[in-house]
Length: 265
Image (cartoon, rainbow, N blue to C red; front, side):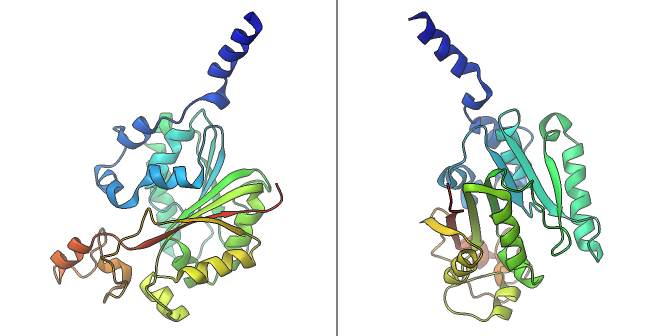
């Protein structure tokens, strides 16, 4: 009996047995209020739980941008896993990528207690494509980035990098603005919307298997046909006051939520 009790206590205090602290991750004072206001549209807990996030995981986020999901993932995994942020490279041509990375690094530096364990890697295909040491990630996630990868002609190389980073059996979780029908590649790049079958085929070509799909981030009000593409909708509202009320009533974009697996476990 004593040995059973000792084993139970050991499991309770072991790092791998720590429960994910969703209350702090989603409701903590560290979160930007504007970011927090998007939770109702982006469903971060439901999305990450659908992907299978659990304590002790090594998770890579590809193209984290300004850090919307970093505010959620970093506290969830601090002392309870490892979080890699595969951001732009300092060697990237043009100013946008470097400025984006610089702002992201400033965000992390402003709260070292929370973000001090975040591991930064730099992504610039085809020269820099190691998201994390090969075969070490339990999960790789990406949110609303496929159109950007297509613009850079980097979709295939980034999917290959994701595949390389994952362990056999690892999960690739993806959320992407969803096109309402067949559109050209140029329309995808311009509008931000991509057909689901295009994403699935690209992932399968990279060696992934589709494990599940979810409508967590669906929005039936979104026709995916707007003058400024997905950026007509909130939070961007690129058209300014033109049809602003109509776009606010639609809300954020209709999105596919896909769970892929790297075979071989």
